[in-house]
Length: 92
Image (tube, rainbow, N blue to C red; front, top):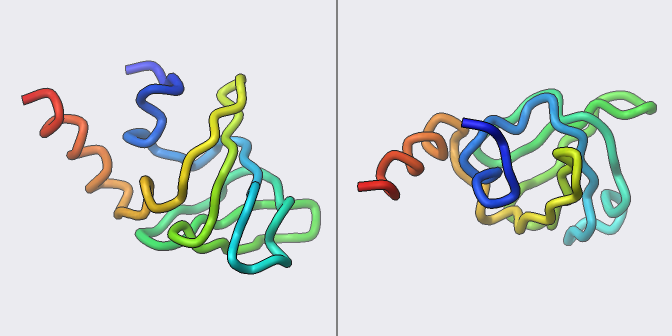
């Protein structure tokens, strides 16, 4: 299935270009780069200054696929494999 704005939250985010739009940690706002790793609660960005970890639950992200899509972090605050399973459950 092709990644689109309507199904982005069900796909693997590693490799996508992204930016932190808002966060409870003001030092992370504006951070942008490529998503290098993803866990249940964190996204790891590969930036010009190295790798930076950002909490999913407390942030708002914009992903570029190539058009910008803004996602509330709590919508993707699941284990990546669990998010993929949710698309199957949604179709039933």
